[in-house]
Length: 356
Image 1 (spheres, helix red, strand yellow):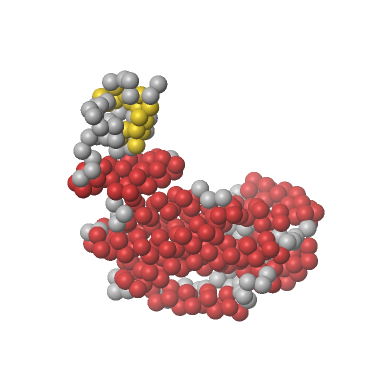
Image 2 (image 1 turned 120 degrees about the vertical axis):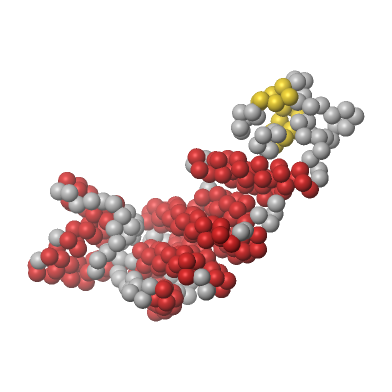
C-alpha cells in the first residue's frame, strides 16, 4: 500500500491516503472524498491541487480553526491542539490560534515542564492580546478576553495540582522546595501578566478591567492557598520572603480595590494540618472543614477558643513534622473519618470561600 500525503477538503487536515485507491475517508472529520491524482508532478498533494495561493491558505486555516473549535467544545484537547497548530501555520497573526496552541500544550505538560510552560504562556498572553486588539471587532474583544481569563484559571489549576502530589512526597528535599516555589511563582505570573496587560491597554474600559480584576483575584487566591500556607516556602533560597510576598499581595490588592473597594487581600497564615495532609487549601475535604469552622465552631465560645488554639499550634507541628510520611498518614486517617461524618451531617464539600 502506497501512502501519500493529502489534505481533506472538508476540515483541512493533513492526512495520508492510499495512492492506489480512487476514494478515501478523512480519519478526523469522517468526510468521504475522491482522490484527485496529479499528473507529472509528484510534489502536489492529492485532493487539493492549487493550495499555494494566499486566499486558499487563509481559507484552509479558517477551516482548521472551525475544526479546532469543534474539538475544543467537545473536550478533545489533543485534536483541538492539532487543528489550532495547523491554523497557526496558515495564520500566524491569529490570536485564537496563538493562544490555544500554547494553552493546550500547557494542559499536556509533564511535571518537569510546568515552569517552562507557564513562562511560555506569559509570553503568549502578551502576543495574543496585542493581536486581539489589532484584528478582532471591538464588540468581540470583551467576550474573547473573558474566555482567555477562564482558560488561564483552568490552566493554573491543572499545572499546580500536577505538581502538588510530587511535592508532598518529596518536600523534605531542599531542591524540591525551591522547585515548588518556582512553580507557584510561574503560575501566578500568568495570571498577573494577563491582568497587567489588560490594565495597560484597556484601563478606561470598566468591563474589561473587571476581567483583569478577576484574574488578579484568582492569582492572589493561588498565592495564598498554595504558597503562604507552607512555612518551608520562605527558607528555600529563591529570594522570596514573607515580607516580599505580603508586599506583592498588597500591590495587586490595591489594583483590585480601584474597582472593588470592599476587597480584602488574603492574609498570610501558617500551614495548617488539613492543608498539609490533603496538599491544598482548596480541595473538597478542606472545604468541608472550613465550613465546619465558620458555621459550627465559630458559633460557640469554646469553638472559637479551639480555632485560636489550632491556628497557634498547627503551623508549628507542620513545620516540625509536615514532611514526615507518618505524620500525614496519622492525621489523614483521623481527618478522613471526620470529613465523612461532617458530610453525612449535611456539611457540603463544594467550593467554599472563607467568611473570616
